[in-house]
Length: 176
Image (cartoon, rainbow, N blue to C red; front, side, top):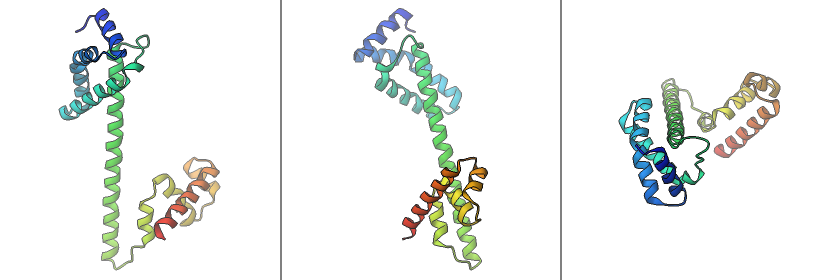
C-alpha cells in the first residue's frame, strides 16, 4: 500500500494530468475496491465489471476529487457503491418490465382463448409509464375526479390533471 505522503503526491500529480501517477494510484487501489464489491455483489463477474467502471469514473473525475473532504480510498468506495446501486436499480426495472410483458402476453392469450377482442387501446396503455397510466385509468375507466385521483395517488390535483392530459395525448398519437 502507498504511504499517505506518497499517495498525497500521486493524487496531486494525477489531478494535474500525470497519467503515470494516476495509473499507479488505480493499481494500488484496484484490489481494495474489487474485494469490497465482491462482498456486496457476491458475484465475481459483476464485482469485476463495477470495479472497472469505478476506475473509469475515477479517470474521468479525478480533477473533482477533494482531498480535504475524504480519503482517496473513501472517494473510490463512494463511486463504487453508487455504481452498484445504479446497476441494481436498472436490473430491478428490467425485471419488472419483463414481468409486465409476460403478464401482458398471458392476458392477450387468455382473451384469444375466450374469443374476446384485445382492444388496441390496451396495447397502447402498456406503452405508458405507470405514473401516467394509473391516473388515466382512474379518470377514464372508473370516473374519478382529478381531486380524488390526487388523493388516491398522494399527488396534487394539478399533477393528476397533467398526467392524464399527457397520457391521453400519448394514446391519441399511438392509436392514430
